[in-house]
Length: 146
Image (cartoon, rainbow, N blue to C red; front, side, top):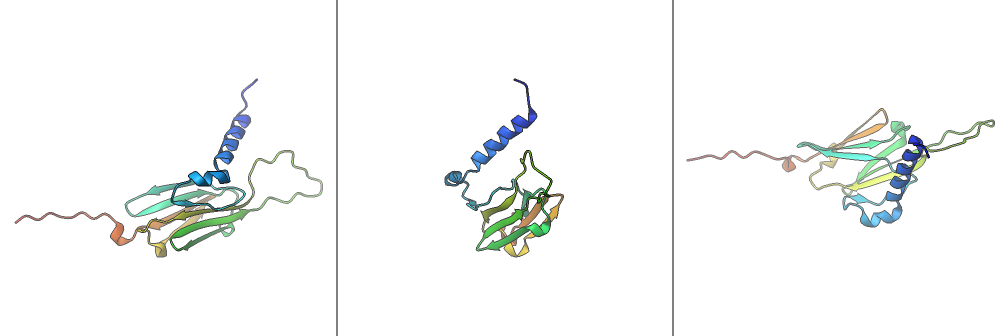
């Protein structure tokens, strides 16, 4: 047997699909709400002193293919990745890319100012900036002496 990068990637993809199986929703993080779709974009979340920043990989999509909503402190990211239509004389021999609709939902922490959320989409990566409310930011308190 020989080493095949494609086979290794396929095994990793299968493991990821199994991990994202609907039954896994029983074990999901408290911040994420179950949301169905045919595929799930990978998401990174980082925190700064000013905001939470969310990065979602959405290759092959345009900004108009993605919908972002916030309702009752629940952030929803959804959309659809259409598959290219085949011409009459074309046939696929292998299809490994994912297509179809997707949806991710997250319960936002109380300190997020939902009225100031901003989004940008560059090179297939959606970046959401979720600023913290002023009162949620850390403040240094000066100690005075008498």
